[in-house]
Amino acid sequence: MLLQRKAIATPLIICVSILGIGLIQFLQLQTLIDSKKSASLETLKKEIKSEHLRLSFLKKMPTFSYKNLIADLVYLNFLQYFGDDEVRDKTGYSLSPEYFEVILERDPRFLAAYRSLSISTSLYAAMPERTIALSEKGLKSISPSVPERSYYVWRYKGVDELLFLGNAKAAQQSFAMAANWASKFSDPESQLIANTSQRTAEFLSRNPNSKYAQISTWSMVLNNHADERTQKRAIKEIEALGGKIVTTPEGTNKIIFPPKD
Image (cartoon, rainbow, N blue to C red; front, side):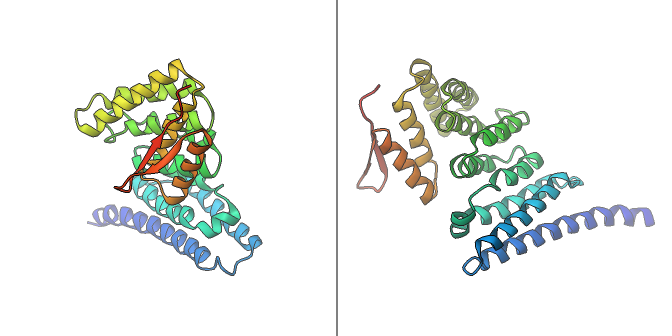
């Protein structure tokens, strides 16, 4: 009877401990957000350093079979961090890859995390190499069917390789893999991704330095449920490449491409 009680109590204690750590992180990060109006830059930097230490601890902390729970808690912390525009304007986004090292190490099949990784780390933290390295590591634990729509990870990787590294060859291979994985499914979304990814891969193979391809890829970013900041950045990049954005009567964005190069 005593052994049975221990067997039940031990996982419960571990779970409560992990939840406690997550709650502490949540409250500490919330304190930073609440005090942002009066905090000095020096104070904010100290808080960021403290958060970095907490994330470093989580990287090393045993998971006790609660990997997904830890990943979810840290992802919630990240959303608070990333969404605080006022503080990020002062301190930048350097912690973004640190969050995702914890998240994707614990749950490499966390599909939504890859999209956030690409936007936060490549676009805002200007660390596309870290994004691609984390994506490549995560892809070792992913298959075409697990998680559902896993082909998006290859798409995000291709976007980063083309737009932020200028590596058209690597991007071509990533889009080809996205097409291959998506083609295994018959639903409309998967077939659409398969077709568009294949066309992008073929176009890059013929025109590796094409502005047209870059505009098309920025349009993926623009139309990928992007937040307002990301939309503005994508529109700015499209216009810089010679494209134009026209808003239709339905309120959607239509891209007018320059002559193909």
